[in-house]
Length: 338
Ligand code: AHM
Ligand code: MG
Image (tube, rainbow, N blue to C red; front, side, top):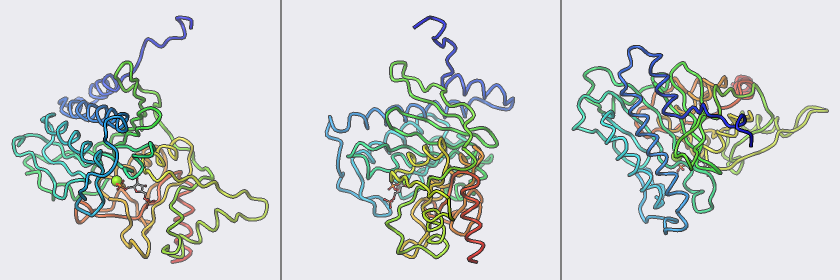
């Protein structure tokens, strides 16, 4: 390789965050520090996932979380790694995790101004098969004097100051966006131990004939959802049907959708009238990324996902997210059926 082929001006996540911080005059550096702690939790979770089969970390832990999901050994380790990184950052007042029934308030950090919501290892049912899983997170800034109770967290996604997810796949990918900002993708360089900016200013294609949904749930779907899927599989004369792609790990299905375009959906249905995925730490952070990348995200009532306010920290919702035009098709079909 000729020396001129080597990029010597690498943008690491640290450099990216530092440059972002400089753009915001009022920034104190707290957010940057919080992101450093996040980054460390991603690296360590990725490390244990990679070694799971070698160090007896596959399988169930023998417990279940607050909503009855069986916990995997790695669910617990991922959760513990995440909580300890957030606590030690000294910048987090309150934390919500899918694996914890109650919000965790760090009483010894009364001045910390951030609230973090997360699913430490999403898609964990796929872990033992070596399929990609990931961490989803959202960050809220608390108002001055906030006690950091869970009421401080029952906010719509429009209030998030940042959100993102990692995908622990062939390589570890990190996608992050800030309020009103662009979406940026980083790839973990294991040799350097750094996330490197590889996908600056990600924009989701306006449309693409790919749908990603668990079609095994068809018998429970409402009519508009059935009509929508039918229309994709049975195009008008001369048209081509859509391709189906469903990994069953939201981060992996979302990452592909972001890059290639298409739509990911987990609708509310007759069996799960409130949907499956969680508003605070699955739907809202993803919705923010898709909107900032030029796509759309709505719930099963076709309301803008980012405006949905959860009543409880673990509330669920139906979700449709992806390319602008693909989500618009779902909205239009629902309007026709209304
Ligand atoms: P989890 O948080 O218990 O891992 O569940 C969330 C996962 C998502 O990653 C994925 O999109 C969905 O559940 C798959 O559900 P299903 O197996 O019903 O298709
Ligand atoms: Mg999850």
